Image (cartoon, rainbow, N blue to C red; front, side):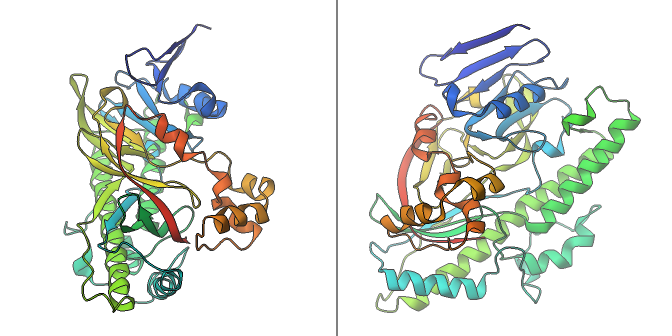
Length: 406
C-alpha cells in the first residue's frame, strides 16, 4: 500500500499530507504528526475513501476520535450532505462578551456563579415552564422533527446542557473581565441528527450505495426532498443554538449588573458568536461544495472567533487568516486526549484539583466522576494554538477565574 507523507508542503503552513491507496482525496492535517492519535488518523483515512469528496479533507490540530468522523474535521462534499459529518449537537458553539470591568474579587465570582445556577439549568435539566417564543428563531416551524419538538425546545431554551459545555468568567490579557459560554442545540439538535442519519441509512440501503454501512457515513442527495429537509432543520438547530446561548448570556449579564452595584454602569461589548458543528454551501478551489465542520470553527479572513481551552487552561479570541488549505477553518478547542471513562480511570482527583487550586480557579470538580472534564483529559491548548498559527491570529488570551460545567 502506497503511503505518501509530505511535511510542510506549502511555505509557512504547518501541516502534513497523507495519501494512501483507496483514499479518493488526500488528508491534510494541521498538526505535528505525534499530536494526533493513530485511531483518529485511521478514521479520517476511511472518511477520505468516500466517493463524493472535493479536493481534500482537513483535520484541525485538536482532532480526536469521533463517531463516523473525527472531531476537528472539515469535509467538503459534492451534491450530498452527510448528517454524521455534522454530528448530534448541531449548532454547538461559543459566545463571549467583553465587560468594562478590569477586576473582580473571588467572593463576587462565587455569588455570580451561585445565581447563575439558580436561573440556568445544566446537564439534562431544562426549565419547568416554556420560555418566550419570541426568543426562538423566526423561521416557520416546518419539517419532520421541528413541529414535534418545538414545545420541548421552548423549555430547553436558555439551558447549558452537559459534557464539555460551560459558563466561565475569565480575565483577558487585555486587562478586562470576559464572560464565555459553550453550548449547543440541546435535545432538538440531537433528535434532528438521529432522525436524518437513520433516514440516510435507509435511503442508502435502497440505493445500493457503495459507501460501506459500517463507516456510519450515510448521505442524503442535496436535491432530494430528504436532503433539503435536513438542511432546513439543521439550520434551524444552528439558529436555535445561537438563541440558546444569547438567552443565557443575557441572564448572566443581568446577574453581573445586580451583584456589582458599586459600579454605576458596567458596559458590555457586542456578543461574539461562532458555531462549530454544521454544514454549509461554500466555494472552495473553484467549486460550490457542501462543507461539513464537525468540531471546527470558521476562520475566514478577519472572522472573529473563539477557541476555548480546558477547565484549567486559557481560551482565545482569534481573527481568522482565511487559509484555503484548511477550508478557512481552525480548531474548535483544545481537543480531548483521552475518553471520558478513560479519564475517570487514569486521572488522579487530588492532582487535578490542585491544578485548579494553584491557579485560583473556582470550579466544580469534586468526585472521580467529574474527571471526564478535568484539565488532564484535554490536549495542551498552547501546543494546539502553536500548530495553527497559519490559520488564526490570537487577539486576546483569557484565563479562567470561575467555571460552571454542564
